[in-house]
Length: 332
Length: 192
View 1 (tube, rainbow over the protein chains, first blue to last red):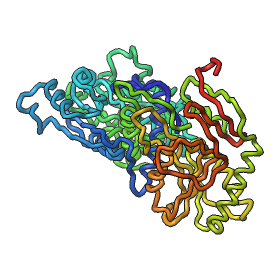
View 2: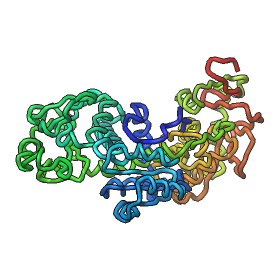
View 3: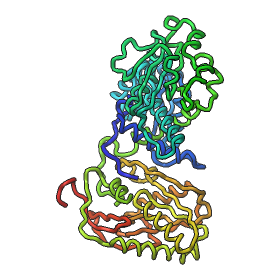
View 4: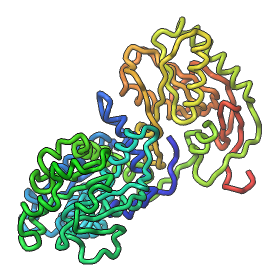
């Protein structure tokens, strides 16, 4: 154990809040939680007495369950809120909902909302730490962190030696609905912070209108880059967002951008296949390709719990606000 | 290794200034050898003994102790490391980052010799006892430390001690295989 440096940012709204060093710290904490998760009783008392509220204003099962499992592994109490069963249905405003939950005394709010910027707005209405669990088309930082962790883990198992968060030299292709994807936004940021070279692959209608501010290149031809990629990161086609206008035909999409069996066979021998889920087989990935050994999809889900434990620990352990005087160092 | 470990446990931006050398390298080696003999004598051999080093200061001492036990008794004693960051009672006072916990076997029925560099308030050891319990129900846990500096805040006592060293609370004890020094922390670059 070592005493850590300057305090973490108060919230996790964007991957940019962490920076390269912050991401590396989360990765190393996640390593510790990996050891904990392998025990017969995968639980530590670190956040005993803390309450984590999950506030999901948009449907999600895996992210919510993942955060709640992560919190319970740290012995935190979990309070669960979903929009469909709440007073929002009765017309209560978002602000009143947040202030009501705040009044019950929670230490962290994990917020998912269909509108970009809601988690940032929530920070103004509560003294709790706010974690963005996906906001509109903006960001989904813990998804990016678990993806970085999964790549780091796969590379370390392959190469042996200490896991390293340095992804330089790695070429990562993010394929699919980039424009409407908060996952793409967070992942491009995280991958590039760690030194990887990111290529966005999508039909022009699903690429951002401008690549300004995206540390990535783009191409509308998957076949032109397929054989150079070390990681193929497939995104779900969000029919609820992209709609019929931008993507008229899912079969055509599959034939041009889907990871078919033929395309999977053309990948580098050690290329990794990833998907944030939920995976729509037959659209972005062929049913057989999803079962290949190179597919890390199940690991991504498992690592989600580890990384979310790491993020909760990093934000909730240590001095809260206001800072508590530490006195003498009891380690020495 | 030990240098890096000690570097990592220091509060940021403050450096250790040694005022007095308490033990030299040979002194630490002799103390460890004596502790190794005491462990063997106390447990009538090394059957079921497991050595666990507390991260970070205890880990290099535990590694050396395992080597000595092997030399003396000709057996390979199981060895692991434990980090107590997730079990501390002062978790809300300061931010900590855990190092590796690596316990290669179920501790149920084993005699665990917990190794740390300095015994001070006893809070780290208290946390370590909780952490160990999550790895099985040990038959017994014994505590070996290179320096007991006093100022206990909990009813915890060591079974094996390299050196009893009376200290003031504002002093810092620096332990490695290369020696033991007493001094204080001061701001980087400043005089002690």
